[in-house]
Length: 269
Length: 334
Image 1 (spheres, each protein chain N blue to C red):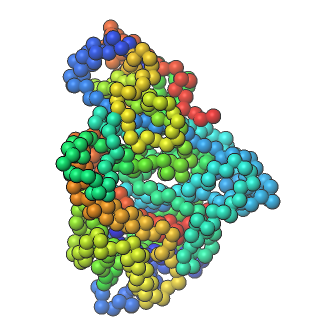
Image 2: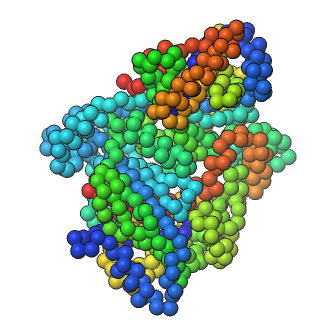
Image 3: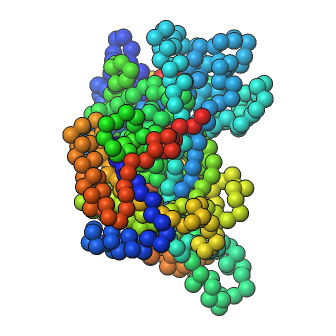
C-alpha cells in the first residue's frame, strides 16, 4: 500500500474556522479522534559481525544476499491505539478481588467512574517508509502498511519480533472524508512528566494535563489517499490529481504542500 | 479449543505421500466407521529465521547462539485469525561472553521424545492476528526487517481431507513446499478429540469481559454444542485438572494412532500446549469471584470506540495448541 499526502500548518487561531470550512466542504461533522501512539525501534544485535550461526552450506550468492539483507534498512514503527476522552484521568479497572473485599458497595464511584483497561486496548501496527525520492509528482508518496494487532499488551510480541519500545505520545484531532481523500487536522500532545517510563502507560493522565508538543498549539492538516496497489502508475497518478484538486479548493484558507522528505525519515540508525 | 495431536510422515524416495496408506489403515482399523470425507481443509506455514544466525561462523571457537524463528501459520479451520509464533528475544546482555546455555533451564525441551533431531527450543511467544493483518505483517517483516528476519520456507497443505471417526476428527493432507523451491515434504495428520472434555467446559470470555456458556464456536461453525457435555462451576476445575485432561486425551490420541500402525513424527504434549486454556480458566475464576465487577465493564464497553468492529475475533486464542503442534512437526532444516 502507498500513502500519498499533502500537508499544511494551521495556526491555532484559524483552527475553529478551518474546522467549519472542512465540515462544509465534506458535508460531514468532524469525527474527533484521540490516538495513543507508541514508537518502537528495530534493534540490531550488538556485536553482529562476530556472531556465528548455523552450519548450512551457503553458496556464495546466498552469502551475498544475506550480507545485503543484514545491511538493509531498519525502521521505527508506530503502534497506534484509539482511545476516548473518558479513558483519561481515570483509574485502572477495579480489581475484582479488592472490590469484593472493599468496604462497601454504596460508594458510587465504583461503577460511575470511567476506567481505562490497558489489557483491552486495541492496537494497530502502522508502518511508514521514508517518502520516495525523485518522484516528479509534488505529493509526498510513501510505502505504508497497517495491520491489526491483538488487544492488550503488545510489548512482549513486539520485542519478540525485533522491536523495542522507545516512547509514546498522543495525537488529538478531527477526521474528515471527502471521496477518496481522508483529511486529518491534528496536533501532537506529550505526556506530562517526561519519558521516564520504558513501557507504555497503563493509565492515562487527565487530558488537560497533557503538554502541547508545538507550544503555540498549532495544528497539522494532512490530506491523504491510501492507494492499495502502489505499483499501478495510473491509480497513483489519479490519487495525486485528486489531492491537487483539494489543494485548489482549500487554496484561500491553507496552503497544502509536499513535506520535506527527510523530516519524515523513519529509518533507524 | 479441542485437544489435538499432529503427526507427520516425511516423504521418502519410495513414497512421496503416505496419504493412501493412512486412509487405508484408517478404513481397516475402524471397519464399523463409514469413512467418507466430511470436508476439506488447508494450511499455510511460513518460516522466518534470524538473518544474522544464517551466516557461516566466522570464528569457530564461539558457541553458536540460539537460533531464533518466527513462524506464520494459517489454518482454514480457524478462519478468524492467523498465528504467529516467535522466539523470545535474548535477554539484552552487553557483555560479549554471555552464557548462552543459561536459557536451557527455562526452555523445556521436547517432551516425550518428539522431534528428536531438534535442540531444545528457546521460549516462544504466541500471537494471533486477524486474517487481514496476516499477509500485511508478513510483508512488513520481509520488507522492513531484513537485517533480522529472513524468509526461509513456505509450506502448504493445499487440499486436505477431513474424516469423522468415532469421537475423533481426522484431518489428512499432503505437505508441499512452495518456497524456496517446490517439492513434496510428506503427509500431515491432525487428530482432534471431540468427545467430552473438561477444557470445553470453560466458557469463552466475551468482549465486555463477561463469560458466555457454551463451547468453542470459532473453530468450525458446525461444532456440536452437546459435545461439551460437562457443566461445571469455575471452582470445580483446577489447573492440574487441565494438565490431567491433556495427558489423558493425549493417550487416547496415541492409542488411536497406534491402531493405524504407521511410523510418524508426533507432536501432542509439546511445550506451552494448554497455556491459553489455563489463562482462560484463570480469567473465568477471576470473573466469577466478583460478579458486580462485570457491571462496570459493561457500562464501559457500551460507549467504547467503535473501530474495526468487523475484525473483532470472538475467541482470539482458539486453535493455538494445534498451531503449535503443526509448527513443531513442520520444521525442516531451518
